[in-house]
Length: 138
Image 1: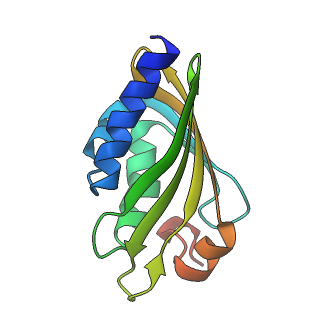
Image 2: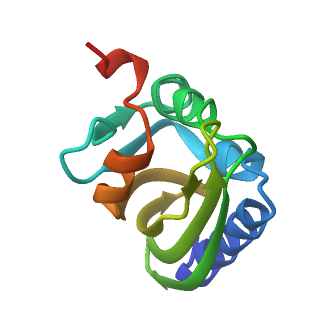
Image 3: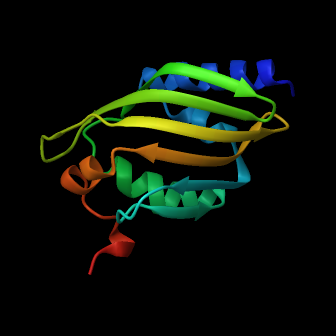
């Protein structure tokens, strides 16, 4: 796919995310998708494979929110197989705290699917508001 086609696909995925609909994002992940979260938080590291992303990252994360988070892009850039998204998230935790993070996602696309993503965010907010995932708790 061209950079323009990759950008359009990601724009459609992000339009759904801004409506709190994660389904197109999940559907666009390749089975061997790799999600890297920068930093040294309990959530940081690599999640390898769509099943791992869903089980170890998304499931425990979404369990902390009263509803799926909205993620609204402010800028989407594409160059070849890579799409970069600057965006703002908004969610409320079950402990009634607002979780409004700012993100930059760098996604590598191939054959109409997301193959890799590196996530940059406000890690201090993650540490302050989110509980660690169950597999990291002592």
